[in-house]
Image (cartoon, rainbow, N blue to C red; front, side, top):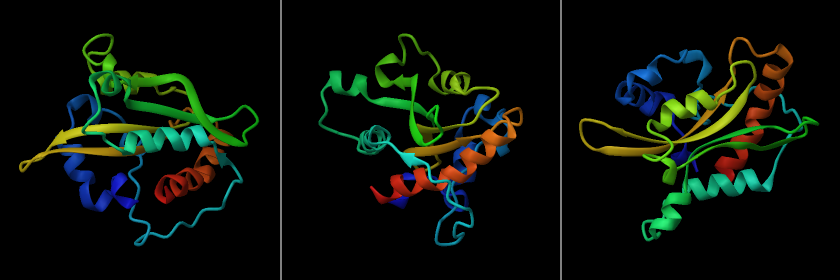
Length: 176
């Protein structure tokens, strides 16, 4: 399921060039585009963290763009969502209340990406999915972007746990 992820070599530069200035102001090292797993095999150790079924269900809902969906279903679709580790650090779960629905855009959310950036905690790590829409010279494109957020101010322990658990969530997303 490699088509759902942004590959740095293939489209990373096109995406960064096409995104608004507010996106470019984020430190580049805080957002990691996933490299092609065939070119860069994973060399990290597993953390033993499990991905919950509700996280996988959200990914599958965001991955499938239903062309025949009615307006109510379209409004309930997610534009962005955050995931975090559970309190016991054993599961990757939904970060409660940290989502943007397509129905919110234009009503309570004027700039979805700006609101998404504001949802990211300044002092802790998160995983996120963002349904990015951008234009190239040829066409308008949509990609589901997986983001590993690890700000400099996050505790070292948190960075290490999130980094070592990133492969678990990537494998679940690629395997579905």
